Length: 326
Image (cartoon, rainbow, N blue to C red):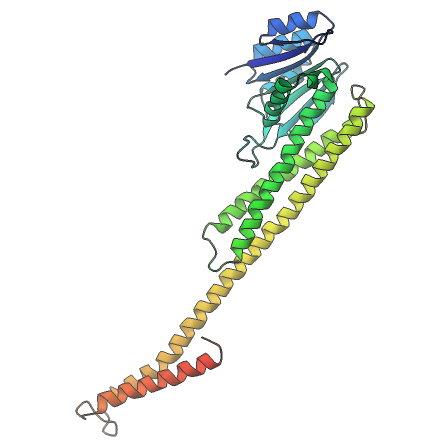
């Protein structure tokens, strides 16, 4: 649905009103005593420009909500903070790396979130708010923290999902023979981990000034809470770094398995060639028309030659077996 807007307004008497149109939001904001969370999914230009007019938003930050896939960043305007960051996953059932951009406008009276695609942490926050309206009553800054904390929690879930997948692939890389699609899966996960790691590092740089209270809109309590978010981001980054080493280990295991199979094959072929070589010599000499060698007319010539060839093959087989080559 294009431009789907949903707004929760906390009134001074503690009641909560819900709006779904920009005009309704503007009327609520005009009271001067309400606090708002406005979420816009699939925003379009006229809608965002109308919100920008009501809340005095900068045109450049509004433009960033409509197009482009920029690096995560935070901008400090006179009366609000603008953040651009990315959710790591798109589905509750498939916690793999699928970044989705979300733009956030925040000050002590309003929180505006805009995203072209559904963002999992926004859905979670809506569900919590529907079950417990006290979440909004605790303040816009608390809602702002819960949103970013939810995004970062999904980073951790994504990293742990990749950890489980790579653990499975690592076990499979030790099997003989390895799966034909093993390296294709490892290479896909390795590419995802590179992008995931970059996103985690960029997000950590974004959240770090919030934990230091570098902006006036962030209270001391909120800055303290963001230190826990930094801890989660550090954990996700360390896990991603370790998983890159696991992926490299799987590649080495796979190469070792291929080399071992090639060696086994070459050894088997060499043994068969070694056994067949004297037999070929015997049959070649037997085929020569030499008077000293019993010819085809001799009554027991052919069985004797076959017996000799069988005896030579048996002796060589037993010898190779004792040496551990078979």
